[in-house]
Structures are given as structure tokens and as C-alpha cells.
Length: 242
Length: 242
DNA sequence: AAGTGGTCTAGACCACCGC
DNA sequence: CGGTGGTCTAGACCACTTC
Image (cartoon, each protein chain N blue to C red):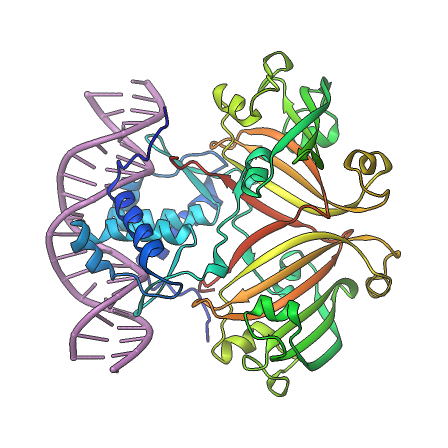
């Protein structure tokens, strides 16, 4: 299932068509056909064309200038809004092969720290998973994950498949997350696990994931090797009145 | 000028009204009035209501569920898409008073590193500005900025006003930026400037800013004290077909 | 079945850009 | 000035959730 591209919506058809035009015959900063031309080409209304273009803008592929036109984005500006990805997805997109080694898996009672972030009472039973994450068989990160036992119990946890896939299967689909990115100095133990000199700098990411409805699902911290990992994000300037 | 709230667009009126409803009488996960109710209340068409709600979603204030309704976002999930901000704006929003001390200001020829990032030939003349950035009079970051001389020459640089404001005034309004976030170990000199122990970890942000049309305007690196600064970003999961 | 948001039409006028 | 994107109307049907 989930196979093929579902062309159910007209704006998707238009967006796909425009993507092809761009990749086949346009260079960065070239103008797209106007919205009215696209209406005629695809036989759709203006709103549908604009929905398609809105999607392309969201993807970072094009930008538009009021009164002038819609243009292909610069290749230098390809990055789009950062998306929530699993470690495996992240590594794959960076060209690595991901694997992992389980360092700990247990039940535990939420301490103050975990409880606050998951919005649960202190001492609520949780599932705790600690893994060394590898990229091309070299240590890349150490990940600690805390899940309320009510969300996913150890007994139902299958380490051979994606955590997010399992959560989705049990009605706890992760939809968004808040991440906090810090720089830290590695502890002796973590340095050893990551195979870097004691006291090296590292990136530490705290993540609280929630469902579409705002239910808090997961609290995770990931410590990345600074020499192998960094974050790339694209931001835009607020151009609202105020 | 730029005073007051410009209620030029109907969807802004609706959005403002809904913001008030939320802050005055709704709690997280409470349902908003339906789109059809809002049409009647404000005497506008459905599309206008949806434009208003789209804006509120973008602001992270509400979320909607197909077939069910539109709901107030969780207070835990307040953070919106990160925006490109100046150091001063960033510090103000974090509750600090920003100031800075100029460490260097000169013309320089672009080296390989700068040239590649600004998309200009090596040795192109640039304006270079190095500042120690303070928050509540304590060192927070060290910022190095490189601008092609054609974009902003030293002679026209006024250190008493915002760099972005000056760029905007001369037709180089910064619209978006790509940022790369890394963890580094501080050099001896930088440790001293930031008033932290030698060899401390720090966050290093590389930023390439561009205009709405994709013209590269600025290359900047900012080194933040790890003990005083971190990044907070909200991400959503890709739920597209594929 | 009723109510919700998601998509879509076929128009319209406005604000802005470039010639 | 003509062409572009930005906003807006007054409808319509569809997909989904809830009861």
C-alpha cells in the first residue's frame, strides 16, 4: 500500500506539472508561467493554481514577487522548513547507513525532569531506551528516549522496527516536536561511547514530541558528535505589519 | 510611521478577532467557532476565514482536524517556525537588553571561505565587522559579518543603527537566511572575550542571508556562549504521500 | 445524518511592477 | 499602461469525524 503518487487533488497535479517544468527547462530566478497561464494550461481555477504554488513555496522551490511574477528559487536556497525526522531518515538523507546498539532498555519511574517535559506526574511509569546511534558503523550520537508506559510499554516495543512506526501503529502518531539545541562538553563516559577525546564539544538536542492533538508522546535527548554532525535550517524574516 | 495595527485586509480583521477570542475565553484544545460561524460573524466569505486561520496556524496558535474542527494549540507547543531575527531582536524577545562592542571594522578581500558563501570571486572587496555582543552587559556572543563592498561600504555603515535596517534602506532587504549550527570548542582568545574558561564548548552559527530575489547579501558567523544560549525550534512531521 | 474542514469554480477588484 | 500576484465573493461538492 501507499504505493505510487496519489494524484487525487487537482492542485497536486498542477504542482507536479510545475515541478517538471522547473527541473526540465528553467534555471534559478527564471520566471514561471503566470498564474493565469497555468489556469488555462491545466483547466483549473485561479485558487487551485495558487494552492499549487503555495505548496511549491512551502517546499522552497519558488518565490513570488507581487506585481512581477513567480520565480524559480536559487539552488543555494534549497533548504526548506526543517522537518521532524527519525535518526534513520536523517542519516539516510545525509548519505549514511544508520544502525544502532542498544545500551539500555528498562522501565523506570519518571523523575522531575522527565515528568515536567512529558506533562505527567513524577514517578509515572515510563519506558526508557538508550541507544548508541551509528552512521556507516561509526558512532554518531547517543540517544535517550522516555515514553510514558501508557503510550508504549516495554513488552510491546520491537527494537527491530522504527519507534515512530510503532507509535503510529498504536494510535500515537508523532506529528510535531519542539527541539532545543545546546552545545555541551562531553562527559568521560559519553566521550568513550562516541570515540572522541574526553572533554570534546558536542551538540545536545532535547526533543518533546506530540501528536496532532497536542498529546505529549516522547521526550528524547540526543548527543551528537560535533565533528560529524550539524544542523541546517532555513529561516525567513518576519514581514508582517506591526 | 508604521504605527498602529493596519487593518487593511479583511482576513487580518478576522485573525485579530480570533486571537482575542482565544486569549479571552478559550483554553488549549478548546474548539474555535467553525469556519461557517466565523463567516457569519464577520460577514466575509469562507476563503477569507480560511486565510485568517491559515495565518493563525502559521503562528502556531491553532491547529485543525479534518472533519472535526479547529482548536487552540497547546501552550506547550507555542513555538512557531523560527524566524530570522537580528541579535537585538533575539535578545529582546529573550528578555535581555542587547548592546555591543566593536572589535574590528575594516575593508578586506574575500578569502576562499567568504567568497564561496557569498557567491563572489575570491579577493572581491568586502566590508568586515567583528563585534562582541552583550546581553544585560554580559558577553553573549562574538559576531563576524562579511558584506560585499557593493552591498554596503564601510563609508556608509552607521554603527549606531541596525545593520538590517541600513541594508533595507539601500535596497538590500534581507529576506531569508540559511543557518548552520555547530558545536565547537572555544579558542583561547574567544574564551577570554566571552569570559568563560578556556576550552569551553560553544554554539557556532554560520548564516548566509539573501534578499527575496535570492541575491546573497551577508555571510556571518556567531559564536554563542553555551551556558547562556540555545536554539529552540519546532518541527512537524512530513505527512505527504510518497 | 449532521457538522466539520478540504478542495474547487468562475468570476471580481486591488496593489504593485516594468515599460 | 498592461500584466502580475494579492485579496475577496458566493456559491458547490467531497472527505472525514462524531453522534
